[in-house]
Image (cartoon, rainbow, N blue to C red):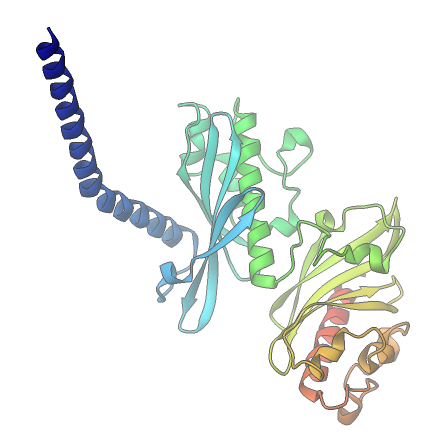
Amino acid sequence: MESTLKNMVLVLFLITLFASGAVAVVNQLTEEPIAEAKAAKTSGAIGEVVPPFDNDIAATATPVEIDGGTATLYTAQQGAKPVGYAVQSFTTNGFSGLITLMVGFLPDGTIQGIQVLSHAETPGLGSKITEAGNPLTASFEGKNPAELKMTVRKDGGDIDAITASTITSRAYTEAVQRAYDVFLSEVYGVEFSSPQIYGVDPYRTVFPEYTNDPASEMVTVQVDGNSMQVFPVKKEHELLGYMVYSAAEGYKSTIDLLVGFAPDGTILDILVTGQDETPGYGTDILLEDNPLLTSLKGKKAAELDIRLQADGGDVQAISGATGSSEGYTRGVNAAYRAFQQVK
């Protein structure tokens, strides 16, 4: 009896060992083909949602942590010029859980196309998100999210839901919004989906009494072929002014600005939200009493020549930082021209 039990244990051990080894071999054999198939599906989806490109788009993959998960931004280029951006986005709020999308944007934010990468929605209902021409996709393609209310019509928005699939439709819309948030933050350098920038509420800094959500009312305009974002700031129904996001090349880096305007065009404040200028010189644009800011703050932009004094304008440069001063001034000038289009 003892011998039989030992034999049984030995046989079971050998079977388990063999099975484990077989599983390991199968995993090794299938791991690479699965990875290749996944990469091919991702590459194919990108090709469907952005204009033609000639760069190695996989090499541009930029993971972005957002809302407890990871989205990925890809940059499509022709030569050295970006022609579009693809964002692999996600939502966990589908009727059956996770939905992943590839959303393609033109440089101005217009949605070029959307492809569903994965889902487990109900066949014949939520699964219609994969069908060409479905109302959800049609609500987005060819449109800029800045000009849409990004909720389904049942919730007061501009997005057509799939019939009898409201939960799926809401989740799909959420994933597109998340993709747009990533596009804005990574391409333009400012997280527009939230008023918190570097731990500071810029709207509250300039307009202490505001009560609306400026990001939800953002307007996009074109200045010299570049997209500019303008945020109306309100107290209840009273317009307090506008915050304009602007960016211009400084001496060493792109200088990101948020410029606050009163409705009459008075420059209320200028916040630097991003820069990498020379320490002790160009970084003086961060100082609250720097001569650039004091030349502009509290004055009506229409009554100023927003150029450096060395170029015949009204703006005093920071000593030893002409390149940074020129970039800062160009950014404010562009912001004012954007403000003029929406005031």
